[in-house]
Image 1 (cartoon, rainbow, N blue to C red):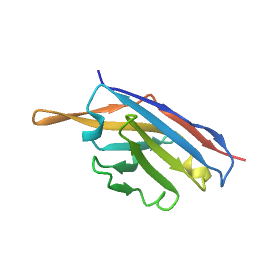
Image 2 (cartoon, rainbow, N blue to C red):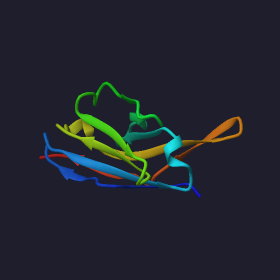
Image 3 (tube, rainbow, N blue to C red):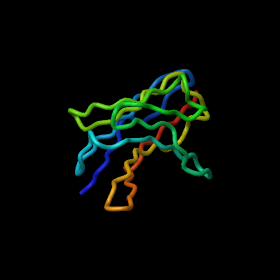
Length: 119
């Protein structure tokens, strides 16, 4: 079955860095786009970054120039390097993949990794 397991969150001071990892299993990882979302308390879950199967990337405007998404197909892992963190980056971060089944797709989510930016 599809599994996504995030790790690497924690408490960091403003201006600091963290790297999130998402270990994937149960599907042909190298053939799928992977993405990171985040959800702050009382707010909707929003897309942070996405990396295509070929390695193309896109970012939310709020994180451009500060966050970098990457993937290691040999390890079935996607990463989110977060630099110059701000208090507004505080959220639960989720790894996501959309698996195609016939003419439809199903989204899968990890359990989430908490990132708290505070002095």
